[in-house]
Length: 179
Image (cartoon, rainbow, N blue to C red):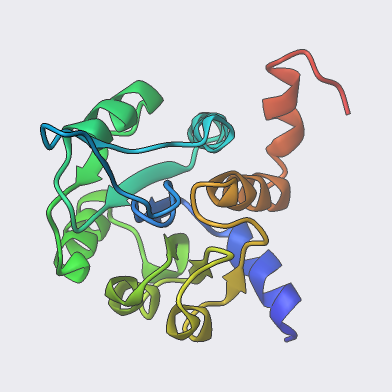
């Protein structure tokens, strides 16, 4: 099976998409104020894609090595319930989530950008690297987004899955858009 067909067939089976945060949902930059307050920038189109994907029946999970109230607040606003922060060993959190949701590996996609993501990427049915991911991550992925992390990569992933599960048109119709 050629790589493009593999991605299409794998996307049809996905019930859970797990995203890293820094470098995937953000551009990887860390901003700090003079008093040490941390800031992150999230892409609003990524957020809408994630809302639409959840509404289409696919669960979203977050596993990140850092701990941040900004991430907790953003994920709450997006309705994402499965958020694991401060997890340098992402595989432990991933296995906990997979078992809790009673999913097989082939039903899960993971989106990453750096070497901490590779252990999980090596387990899932659809491993995705963002456009500006580390070259070793790209090597371990099944598919790479055109967009960079924090610049529409998550939206690209959400659309890929919805289009291949035939839920994209129904999500557009939710906004009065007919295809």
